[in-house]
Structure formats: C-alpha cells, structure tokens
Amino acid sequence: MGDFISSKTVATRKEHKCFTCCRNMPKGSTMLASTNKEDGQIYTLYICQTCVDVIHEFPHFEGSEWLYEHETIREALAPGQTPEQLLEDLRNSKPSLNS
Image 1 (cartoon, helix red, strand yellow):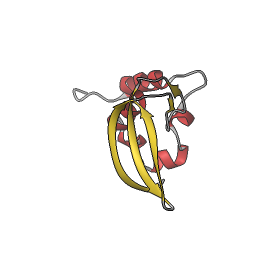
Image 2 (cartoon, rainbow, N blue to C red):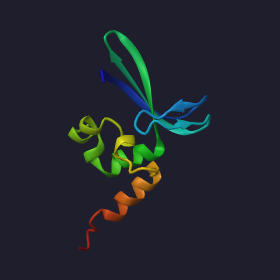
Image 3 (cartoon, one colour):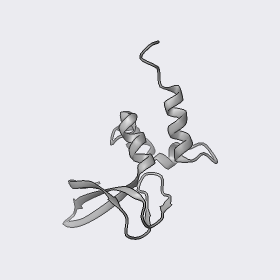
Image 4 (cartoon, rainbow, N blue to C red):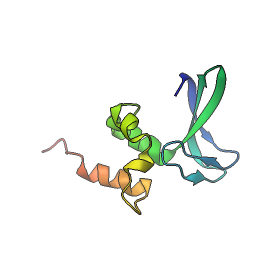
C-alpha cells in the first residue's frame, strides 16, 4: 500500500468490494473510504463496517504484521465463516477485564 492521504466514513453511491474481506457491498453500505497514493497514482480503498470493527477492536489486525502475513481478513476466515462471525468469535475469546 502507498502513502496514506485521508479516510472518511461514507454511504456508498454504488457497489464496492471491501478491501479486507473481499465481499461485494451494495450501494448505500456504510464503508470506510481510504484514499492513498502510490507510484504517482491516487486510489481509494473501501473497507466494510464489520472489517473496520475488527481492525479497531483487535489492533493486531490493523496494518500490522498480522495483516502483512494474512493480507486480508478474508484469509483469516474459517471455511464458510463470515466476517461477522469472525468478529463475534474474536469478541467472545477476548479476555474480560474482570478475569
């Protein structure tokens, strides 16, 4: 990935593929639009809200060695598992502050 320029949450005006889980998200979806520049080209990546939640709640997914090792959240999914199920599993396995 190139140099980060900006990001904002948007309601999409057309279908976009999520950069991290590779699902096609329908028009009107809430997504994070991340604008970047690489080799003189400006481009925007779209990330669905579920993947944004995974990245924010579990920082080891965010732009870290984990992401470089797996490249996408899609690669972390068990066969047949959705990103929503992955998020739920991660939340359920997260140690509680009361433990």
